[in-house]
Image 1: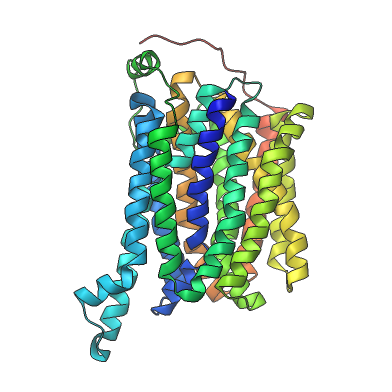
Image 2 (image 1 turned 120 degrees about the horizontal axis):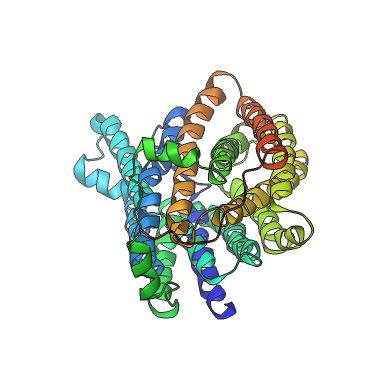
Length: 420
């Protein structure tokens, strides 16, 4: 298992490193071409809206054709999207021209290319859920949370270096970090092609392909949400994801308007968040699951996230921010890892890829809603409003987790494969 954990760790790390390059600068990039906070929120939401469709499809395909080939498809889409992001300005100049009379058309053409880039990346960017399915394939129930925690650590480490270097590179122009991220995606593609072995055997893929699969419809998603064991976890995933996505997507604007930070400073602050998340998921989660049940950790994480989001809403200086981000990273890192670990134990082995894809799809839906709603609250009410909404949502998550996971849990899964 260890020989395969390192390559998939590096895949996630390099992918999130590239993602971190562009995360802190995208709002500033779009704002350069006249984008309002609402448009910036919709730009962020467009990636998630596309991933809402792409993530479960890629998860299902990885169940049938293997994790490795679908990872290659996913990274290829990310590479194309990043090149479009880097070349948005010259492409727009070629299509519209840069004369003053056509400046508005030129700006909107650039923003349209940015939207198209994020949609392409969202449709093909389900590689994190596929990596989680890969970890599930090579671990058992006893060490799965630890394995998924390592993926979370790779995620966090990518955010340590990515935003910091992305913010630094942005001093030479916003296209430079995008080109650098595209180069990292190319390296990632080569590492998957030559270093990462497949986790599913042909016999396992054949067995999985013989089982009936639910349709990709709203009705099917609703049925999944109401399934025993899985339903409560999907419910928690959705509402926690919404609250956390409000923080993630509004954080660059919050830093700009409340703290007066630019892209470089925001990148360093996100690097601090990444360090905390890496420590939580790489070290803390493994220690916590040895002492406490996963359902108890979900309940505790939800309560801590409530407090952290409320404190974030009323943060007024950098020292308060650094203090507030510690419990927020602890709660977010724990919940992200433990929810996915519990989900993989709530379904049959042949359902893991599709289930994690549905989980990613629900999370993507929150990333459609959160920046759109958060952008409206930010612009119309105040910079504190998104944090207060997120805290209110987490109050509900905490109460729901107590009722459905602790007081009235569903019976455990009977570990058997039902033939078709």
